[in-house]
Image 1 (cartoon, rainbow, N blue to C red):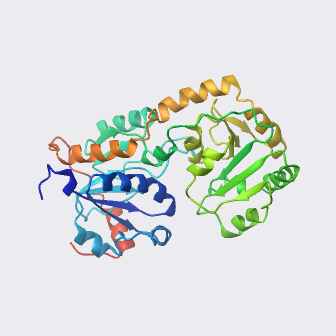
Image 2 (cartoon, rainbow, N blue to C red):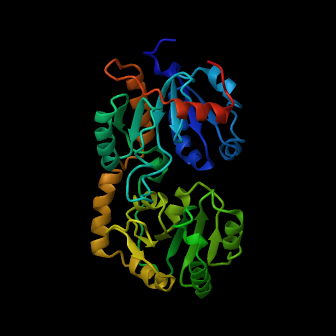
Image 3 (cartoon, helix red, strand yellow):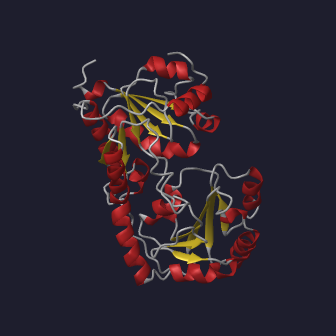
Length: 352
């Protein structure tokens, strides 16, 4: 195989959970446009199930090894070191800020050769980490998942009956979906007819919680069991959420977000701490307050300044350029024996 011919390259999209599907699909489309080979693999049952309608899925880790990819686009935290190709971190979400420290989103696990970052606010941190751990490269590309969000459609925010998108995390200490007072207030508001609600919950949320919210369904409240959020974003005027990375995705439309007990509330959010304040906050959001909107525009420029819908193309370009470059300046990755053992145990793969 000649490495100077991108169309001959073999790509692998490596995922764990179903929420990675809408991140990988824009990448898949871009790779197919370039007449390269693309396969998928999931190391968790949930991820494998969401790929059931695809024909280019590798069924087990033996097939992955035999496929011998050139580039592994990883939409999860870990990736086997024993499969071929450069390992690229694409990320399964924005930094949700569920903790005061940045450990989760910016944890260097020693698996990756290249980090394709989403915008200046993430690139700057990974560049600093790169100086301390010089075994990987960092290239800012934007995030493939939000490609279908662009171009942003101009909407009027003067509706008398706004559409409110509700999303909730699965993290127990933060999830609004687990709050009985929030449930009752949304139930009441859905019966007034003043708002149209569209709701999703995280795939990992308990089934009984999901079913409870589904039972609210009426002409003013619709529950969606999906990870394809962008069509719902586009239909909605404002968002009501807790502390989840879906907030940042929605905000790229420059639409206001009301948060309930956000762990690290920021000036671009309308944060409340009591269920009784939900209606007032939603009405405030529909006014698109100048101060909030100015902060939101500023936040988006740092989070994800790319509005051309071509982040997938930038990721693929970055991968090919990195693959074909002289990488001798990079240090060796850490031995990482414990993490490598856990990956092998999970996949039940013990060959050397």
